Length: 196
Image (cartoon, rainbow, N blue to C red; front, side):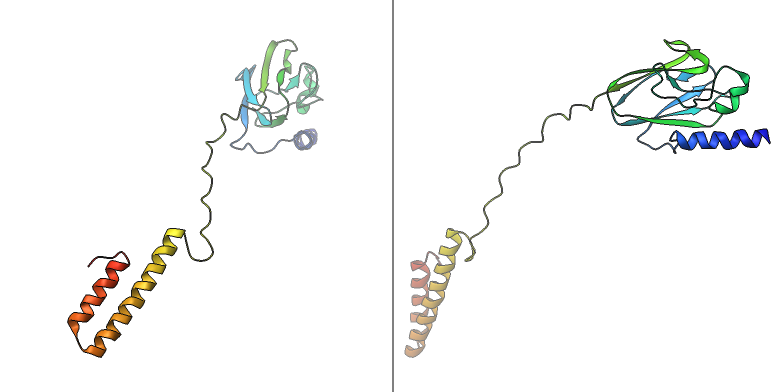
Protein backbone atom coordinates (compact mmCIF):
# COMPACT_ATOMS: atom_id res chain seq x y z
CA UNK A 1 0.00 0.00 0.00
CA UNK A 2 2.74 2.44 0.98
CA UNK A 3 4.71 1.58 -2.22
CA UNK A 4 1.60 2.17 -4.38
CA UNK A 5 1.01 5.51 -2.67
CA UNK A 6 4.62 6.60 -3.20
CA UNK A 7 4.51 5.62 -6.89
CA UNK A 8 1.27 7.53 -7.40
CA UNK A 9 2.71 10.56 -5.64
CA UNK A 10 5.91 10.33 -7.69
CA UNK A 11 3.84 10.23 -10.89
CA UNK A 12 1.85 13.29 -9.79
CA UNK A 13 5.07 15.17 -9.00
CA UNK A 14 6.50 14.19 -12.38
CA UNK A 15 3.45 15.58 -14.17
CA UNK A 16 3.40 18.74 -12.09
CA UNK A 17 7.05 19.53 -12.81
CA UNK A 18 6.97 19.06 -16.57
CA UNK A 19 8.59 15.64 -16.91
CA UNK A 20 8.34 15.28 -20.66
CA UNK A 21 10.19 13.03 -23.08
CA UNK A 22 13.62 14.31 -24.01
CA UNK A 23 13.80 15.78 -27.52
CA UNK A 24 16.77 16.51 -29.79
CA UNK A 25 16.61 20.22 -28.83
CA UNK A 26 17.03 19.51 -25.11
CA UNK A 27 20.25 19.60 -23.12
CA UNK A 28 20.57 16.79 -20.61
CA UNK A 29 22.21 16.36 -17.23
CA UNK A 30 22.64 12.92 -15.70
CA UNK A 31 21.80 12.72 -12.01
CA UNK A 32 24.27 10.04 -10.95
CA UNK A 33 24.84 8.95 -7.38
CA UNK A 34 26.53 11.95 -5.72
CA UNK A 35 27.22 13.81 -9.02
CA UNK A 36 25.50 15.88 -11.67
CA UNK A 37 27.10 15.11 -15.05
CA UNK A 38 28.08 17.56 -16.40
CA UNK A 39 28.44 19.62 -13.24
CA UNK A 40 28.25 22.88 -15.25
CA UNK A 41 26.16 23.16 -18.39
CA UNK A 42 25.95 26.20 -20.68
CA UNK A 43 22.79 26.71 -22.73
CA UNK A 44 21.12 29.44 -24.77
CA UNK A 45 18.04 31.17 -23.34
CA UNK A 46 14.91 29.23 -24.27
CA UNK A 47 16.60 25.81 -23.97
CA UNK A 48 14.96 23.04 -21.99
CA UNK A 49 17.32 21.22 -19.62
CA UNK A 50 16.35 17.69 -18.63
CA UNK A 51 17.83 15.99 -15.55
CA UNK A 52 17.53 12.18 -15.50
CA UNK A 53 18.24 10.07 -12.41
CA UNK A 54 20.60 7.38 -13.75
CA UNK A 55 21.75 6.32 -10.27
CA UNK A 56 20.17 4.05 -7.69
CA UNK A 57 19.63 6.64 -4.93
CA UNK A 58 16.89 9.27 -4.57
CA UNK A 59 17.87 12.84 -5.48
CA UNK A 60 16.49 16.32 -6.09
CA UNK A 61 17.35 19.23 -8.38
CA UNK A 62 16.93 22.32 -6.21
CA UNK A 63 18.00 25.90 -7.01
CA UNK A 64 20.23 27.61 -4.43
CA UNK A 65 17.68 30.46 -4.39
CA UNK A 66 14.68 28.05 -4.38
CA UNK A 67 13.47 29.37 -7.76
CA UNK A 68 13.03 25.77 -8.92
CA UNK A 69 12.80 22.42 -7.16
CA UNK A 70 12.19 19.04 -8.75
CA UNK A 71 10.75 17.56 -5.59
CA UNK A 72 9.68 19.96 -2.86
CA UNK A 73 8.90 17.10 -0.44
CA UNK A 74 12.38 15.63 -0.72
CA UNK A 75 14.85 16.10 2.16
CA UNK A 76 17.69 14.31 3.92
CA UNK A 77 15.19 12.43 6.10
CA UNK A 78 14.79 8.76 5.11
CA UNK A 79 10.97 9.13 5.22
CA UNK A 80 11.14 11.66 2.38
CA UNK A 81 12.70 9.17 -0.07
CA UNK A 82 9.42 8.49 -1.96
CA UNK A 83 9.09 12.24 -2.50
CA UNK A 84 12.51 12.54 -4.18
CA UNK A 85 13.50 11.94 -7.81
CA UNK A 86 13.71 8.15 -7.96
CA UNK A 87 15.86 6.14 -10.41
CA UNK A 88 14.89 6.70 -14.09
CA UNK A 89 12.71 9.70 -13.27
CA UNK A 90 13.28 13.02 -15.03
CA UNK A 91 12.86 16.68 -14.25
CA UNK A 92 12.75 19.29 -17.04
CA UNK A 93 12.94 23.05 -16.93
CA UNK A 94 13.10 25.73 -19.65
CA UNK A 95 15.53 28.55 -18.89
CA UNK A 96 14.04 31.65 -20.51
CA UNK A 97 16.46 34.33 -19.35
CA UNK A 98 20.23 34.69 -19.27
CA UNK A 99 21.97 34.17 -15.95
CA UNK A 100 23.80 31.71 -13.72
CA UNK A 101 21.62 29.22 -11.87
CA UNK A 102 23.41 27.16 -9.18
CA UNK A 103 21.55 24.11 -7.86
CA UNK A 104 22.09 21.10 -5.59
CA UNK A 105 20.62 17.81 -4.41
CA UNK A 106 18.83 18.17 -1.05
CA UNK A 107 19.83 14.61 -0.07
CA UNK A 108 23.54 14.71 -1.02
CA UNK A 109 24.56 18.37 -1.33
CA UNK A 110 23.84 21.91 -0.27
CA UNK A 111 23.50 25.48 -1.53
CA UNK A 112 26.68 27.32 -2.43
CA UNK A 113 28.28 24.38 -4.24
CA UNK A 114 28.50 21.98 -1.30
CA UNK A 115 28.55 18.26 -2.14
CA UNK A 116 26.32 17.17 -5.00
CA UNK A 117 25.77 20.46 -6.82
CA UNK A 118 25.82 21.95 -10.31
CA UNK A 119 25.38 25.13 -12.31
CA UNK A 120 23.32 26.04 -15.37
CA UNK A 121 24.82 29.01 -17.24
CA UNK A 122 22.27 30.57 -19.60
CA UNK A 123 23.48 32.91 -22.32
CA UNK A 124 21.25 35.24 -24.27
CA UNK A 125 20.36 34.26 -27.81
CA UNK A 126 23.50 34.09 -29.92
CA UNK A 127 24.41 36.82 -32.37
CA UNK A 128 22.56 35.95 -35.55
CA UNK A 129 25.71 36.80 -37.51
CA UNK A 130 26.05 39.05 -40.51
CA UNK A 131 22.97 39.69 -42.58
CA UNK A 132 22.65 37.64 -45.74
CA UNK A 133 24.18 39.19 -48.85
CA UNK A 134 21.95 41.66 -50.63
CA UNK A 135 20.10 40.22 -53.55
CA UNK A 136 20.33 42.12 -56.81
CA UNK A 137 17.14 43.99 -57.61
CA UNK A 138 14.75 42.02 -59.76
CA UNK A 139 14.87 42.78 -63.45
CA UNK A 140 11.95 44.84 -64.65
CA UNK A 141 9.13 42.86 -66.19
CA UNK A 142 9.02 42.82 -69.99
CA UNK A 143 6.69 45.36 -71.57
CA UNK A 144 3.20 44.02 -71.93
CA UNK A 145 3.27 44.60 -75.66
CA UNK A 146 5.70 41.75 -76.39
CA UNK A 147 9.25 42.34 -75.16
CA UNK A 148 12.15 44.76 -75.05
CA UNK A 149 12.69 47.56 -77.57
CA UNK A 150 15.33 45.54 -79.38
CA UNK A 151 13.00 42.53 -79.59
CA UNK A 152 10.24 44.75 -80.90
CA UNK A 153 12.54 46.16 -83.65
CA UNK A 154 13.55 42.63 -84.68
CA UNK A 155 9.88 41.55 -84.77
CA UNK A 156 8.96 44.55 -86.93
CA UNK A 157 11.88 43.91 -89.30
CA UNK A 158 10.84 40.26 -89.61
CA UNK A 159 7.29 41.33 -90.44
CA UNK A 160 8.57 43.79 -93.08
CA UNK A 161 10.88 41.11 -94.50
CA UNK A 162 7.94 38.71 -94.82
CA UNK A 163 5.87 41.36 -96.56
CA UNK A 164 8.75 42.25 -98.86
CA UNK A 165 9.34 38.59 -99.79
CA UNK A 166 5.63 38.06 -100.41
CA UNK A 167 5.55 41.12 -102.65
CA UNK A 168 8.68 39.95 -104.54
CA UNK A 169 7.14 36.51 -105.10
CA UNK A 170 3.91 38.01 -106.45
CA UNK A 171 5.85 40.31 -108.81
CA UNK A 172 8.07 37.46 -110.02
CA UNK A 173 5.06 35.18 -110.48
CA UNK A 174 3.44 37.67 -112.80
CA UNK A 175 6.58 37.78 -114.90
CA UNK A 176 7.25 34.05 -114.48
CA UNK A 177 10.93 34.55 -113.67
CA UNK A 178 12.72 32.68 -110.90
CA UNK A 179 15.82 34.81 -111.35
CA UNK A 180 13.92 38.03 -110.72
CA UNK A 181 12.19 36.50 -107.71
CA UNK A 182 15.52 35.46 -106.14
CA UNK A 183 16.96 38.91 -106.83
CA UNK A 184 13.94 40.62 -105.21
CA UNK A 185 14.11 38.40 -102.11
CA UNK A 186 17.85 39.12 -101.81
CA UNK A 187 17.05 42.84 -101.94
CA UNK A 188 14.49 42.42 -99.17
CA UNK A 189 16.96 40.57 -96.96
CA UNK A 190 19.62 43.21 -97.52
CA UNK A 191 17.16 46.01 -96.81
CA UNK A 192 16.09 44.45 -93.45
CA UNK A 193 19.55 43.43 -92.20
CA UNK A 194 19.71 39.83 -93.35
CA UNK A 195 22.35 38.69 -95.78
CA UNK A 196 21.97 35.58 -97.89
